[in-house]
Length: 441
Image (cartoon, rainbow, N blue to C red; front, side):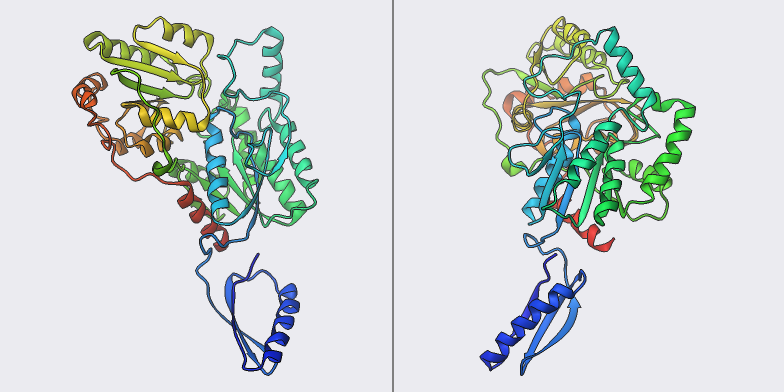
C-alpha cells in the first residue's frame, strides 16, 4: 500500500537527503496506514504528523486485489458482467488486479484454471439436451457436492492462486454463484493473510438458482455452511438489498455494503447501424438456462399479440437458448433468433434497439443484473414477471401489449431515446464505493 506524504524541504540540502534516507527505512517498518503522513525535516530529523486522508485518491490507489470468478468474458453467462466491470473499474483507479478464472480475457492478468465443463462462449451453438450418462453425472454432482458442483474446481483455483508467488494481495474478492468460490477465497485469504470480501450476486438459500437447494434437508445443511463461511469474511457485498439482507442474516455483525450491479458507461456505447425501419424489441441473454422458472413462452405470447396488430414490430433474441426454445421462437412470426455475441457487441445491439424486453422469474425479489445494462441504454424497458423492484421502471402497471403498441409511432420517429428514467451506475462508481468500504473494514 502506498502512503502519500508531503516533504517540507529544509534549507539544508544535506538535511533533506538525510530525511529521505530515514523515510525509506521508516516506511519499511510502518504497518499499513490509512492516513496522510506529513513529514517535517529539521536538521536531519524526521517528524511525522498525521491527518485524515480522503482515501482512496482516484487513480492513485495501489491496493493489490485478487478476484476469484467462475464467469468472465468471453463467456456469455450473465454472471460474467459484474466481476469484469468491477475489475475494470478497480484498475482504472490504479489498483493492481489479478484474476483467477477458467479463462482470462486478453486484457487481464492472473491465472487461468481450466474447468472440466467449459462455459459457452460467443462461438457456441444453441444449447443441446444432454444424454442419459451426462444427466446422471450432472445429478450426482448437483446432489453430492456441497455447496455446488463447482467445488472441486474452486479448490483447484485456490491452489493455483497460491502458486502466484510474485503477487501478494491486500484483498481477495470472491463472487458467487458458484458459492464454492467463497470457500476458495477463504482458504487463500487465510493462507496469504489477506482480507476477504464476499460478493453474493444471487440469493444463496432464499431464492436459489440451483433447484436441489430448495429441498429442506439441503437448506438446513447449507445454512450451517453459509453461516460458518461468511462469518469469516471481512466485508459482504451484494447488488440488491434483498440479497444483502439474506447475507447479513447468515453472518450477523459482518461489515456489509450494498453495491448495485454496474452497467456500461453510456459515453462508450457505440450503437450498431440499423438496416431497416422495423421497430426492434430486443431481449439479450438466456431464459430457462439462466433460471429454471423463467421460460420463453411469456415473451413469445406477448409479441404474438403485438405483432398481430402491428406488423412493424420485430422481436430479436440474442443469447443461448435450448433446442425447444429455439424451435418455439422460430415458429413465431416476426421473431428472429440470433447467435450469442460478445459483451461489447451485445451492448451495441442494446444501444441500437428501440425497446428492451426483460423477462424475470415470477415474484423474484432481487432485480436481475441485466437491468443495470438496460437502464444504461436510456431506452424503454418492458418487463414480464419479477417482484417489487419493477416499480423503478416506467409503465410497469400498464398492460404490456397496450404499452408496446403505444410506442410504435414514437419509435418510428426515433423519439424513444431517454424514455427510461434513472442514471446508470457505472463501473467507476462501483469500484470507488468498494474501495471506500475496504478501507473502513
